[in-house]
Image (tube, rainbow, N blue to C red):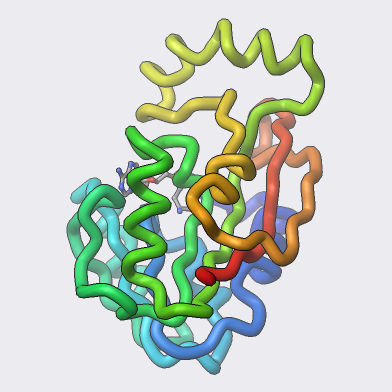
Length: 193
Ligand SMILES: C[S@@+](CC[C@H](N)C(=O)[O-])C[C@H]1O[C@@H](n2cnc3c(N)ncnc32)[C@H](O)[C@@H]1O
């Protein structure tokens, strides 16, 4: 998950988090690659990560972060804290891997304050029919090799189906890591009504 040689993804992470304020929940924080990009208006980040090795790296990244970050164990299906605990939730390159997108997004809505924001950056199903069919075919193998990652999910539709109001969304082709295939990505924000 190193991005030392990938300034393009780092720039996208900056765009993902720009302007956030208050108390933020990041789900599936990995090794903490988003942490350097949190703006000063963020009072606290709670970063949930189920994998203990990634969590250990995230704790090191948290120590260097420009805002307070607490790294905690857990998973998207049962988030910490009660209803309306967060001003914003961040999902980056995670909705491809969670076992149940609808359940995750229902949890996101539960923990967001009314009017709170979901910030998302995800690779998604190709809008090109032939590519999408190829993604369907490769998904079983990809999942097994890629830690449960699905290349073929229509994540924008799942966000809307969860009742979140998409206010801004860019869709673009992006290579998430040097040497990886180019995938369609979405980056945007959605409001908890
Ligand atoms: C491709 S990595 C992305 C990490 C990080 N968000 C980033 O942008 O670099 C996918 C992450 O999702 C996490 N993940 C997978 N299933 C999860 C779940 N059910 N709940 C929370 N996190 C999960 C993995 O442990 C991993 O950290």
